[in-house]
Structures are given as structure tokens and as C-alpha cells.
Image (cartoon, rainbow, N blue to C red; front, side, top):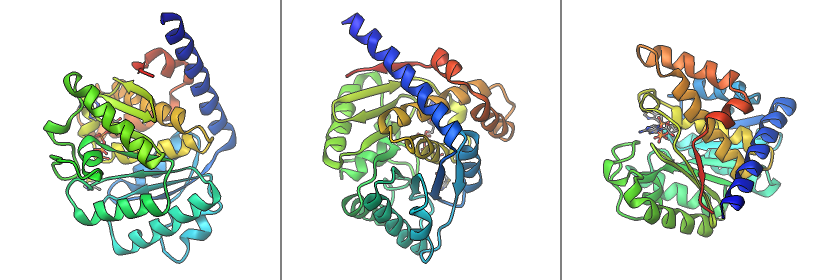
Length: 282
Ligand SMILES: Nc1ncnc2c1ncn2[C@@H]1O[C@H](COP(=O)(O)OP(=O)(O)OP(=O)(O)O)[C@@H](O)[C@H]1O
Ligand SMILES: Cc1ncsc1CCO
């Protein structure tokens, strides 16, 4: 058993390094349709990882852009009619052409409009990865959820005492959607069918800067452009957590934002592996 775990860890470390190197070398084009609150940080997060961002969102041009992209990132934050129309068009192109895609379920816990829209999009054009906090993921399932606006509610947070229950739910969600599920929080869970990856990196400052979840969404898009959905999601989540930890000695969220981007730009694969708090359950 110990031997098997050790072999699994070595295998994932090797794959994480390969993904990081491939992105640096190939500079994937990442089409992001995201909210205007954190759009600038999202473009810089893609660049920090070695990708090239394009934030086109006019419904009359998005199909043409998505088809040229290596990955697509969708985000439901601050939703508008125009972005709803555009995201569905892009998602369909990505699905038909096999372009890796991710959707961030921002606000489905507090808005029926977004919940219904997310369900429709996932049904019509299934994304490769579905990301949210635990309140949003429960709401997608129409389970009781305690979202506080776009944030997770205390009652829904993943803790040691509800880990198994939440993991079982995410496994079901992954099987139903055939997607990799990323649940963010103090404990992050990445689930694909029976596989479960738990990440304990991160820091409270990440919750005090708006858009860190949105940045993680486009980072994962950049990394899954390699075709490695589970490992790309794990690597992106590790990077955000470790970059946050390395930046937290700042006075406030202004300098934290700058430090975070610097860390995302400079983190090496060796540092990520060394500092990762990753547990594999499958
Ligand atoms: N309490 C916490 N302690 C440590 N790290 C955290 C905590 N909560 C979230 N994180 C980390 O912050 C990052 C963003 O996750 P979060 O769940 O806050 O996303 P989000 O709600 O979508 O964020 P946003 O709406 O600001 O974009 C992740 O890397 C996650 O691991
Ligand atoms: C969409 C949105 N609404 C308030 S803050 C924010 C960006 C982080 O999700």
C-alpha cells in the first residue's frame, strides 16, 4: 500500500513537471470569457503560466476565436445577456472540436438564473472541468446550499468531519457530467470519477483578494490545454495555493496582488513539488 502510494506520487510529480514545461514551450492560446471585476488579473495569470490570453466576448466573434484557441475558460460572474449568449456559442465550439474547457460556477449558489444557465450549458456542451466552491457545487445539484453571495457558506465548507460525504457528492457529480470537478476552499478537492486529490496549500489572504478563484479558473484552462485534465487541475490548484503562501507576508491585499502574480510567474516545477501538500485518495 505504501509502495503503491509512493509510486503514484512520483508519477504525478513527473506529469506536473511535463505539463508545466509543455505550456512554457508551446504558449497555448487561452480564450477567456470572464467577468469584468477580475478580467485583468485573469489575463495576467494566463501570461504568468506561459500562455497567451484572449478575452474576446462579442457573440458575433466568439466562435471564430474559440476555434483557434487551445483552451476555453468560462466564468459566470457578473453575468450579462451578451456573455450568456457568447459563452454558450463558445462552449459548443469547444465541445464539437474537442478543445479543453472549464466553467467556473461563480454565483450559482445565489442566483437561479445562473443555476439554470449553468445546467443548460453543461448539458448542451459538456465542459472538461467544472469548478466552484462547495456552496456552488451543491447548488448545481439542487442540494441545500448556504452560499453567501458568490462565497462559500460556513456550513458548506469542506472539513475533516464532512470530507467523505463531500467527496462522495463530487464523485457523483463527476460521473453525471463526465467532467473533472474542482472544489476550492481551505481544503481543495479535485475529483474525477473514483480519483480524489486533496490539496491543503493556500492561505486566508487568497480570500481577501477578489478574483483568485477566477484566476485559478483561467490557470487551469491554460494547463489543460495540454490535454491532461486531472493533472492540469491539480497543478493549477497547487500553484495558486503555494503562490498565495509565498506572498502572504504583505501589509494588505494591494501588495498581495502584486506578490501573487510575481510568484505565479516565477514558481518552478521543483518548488511546486517540494512545497505541495497533496494527498491522493484513489
Ligand atoms: N480558507 C482558505 N484558506 C486557504 N486557502 C483558501 C481558503 N479559501 C480559499 N482558498 C484558496 O483560494 C483560492 C480561491 O478559492 P475560493 O474558494 O476563494 O474561490 P472563489 O470563491 O471562486 O474566489 P473568487 O470569487 O474570489 O474568484 C484557491 O486556491 C483556494 O485554495
Ligand atoms: C464576479 C464577482 N462579483 C463580485 S467579486 C467578483 C469576482 C470574483 O468572483
